Image (cartoon, rainbow, N blue to C red; front, side):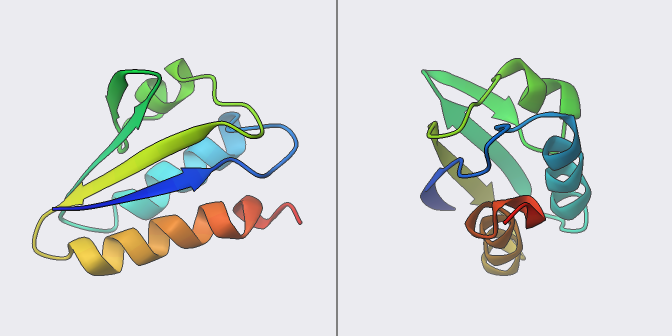
Length: 88
């Protein structure tokens, strides 16, 4: 299991389009993916779970990936956050 803290950088936060991109990327991997924020843990492969977080710009969250391809999954998922989901 690996974890990484990230911060939402895009202006609109983690709304429907970036949430969809996040789920699409996460489901490409076998590893389990969870997001922890404000004391809640949601399945990162569930768009409804992600949307319930209502993460705005500046929100910090912890990404948790566990499984056989966890390193590749974490790199792909982290890249989305680092590149503001393509909204730069």
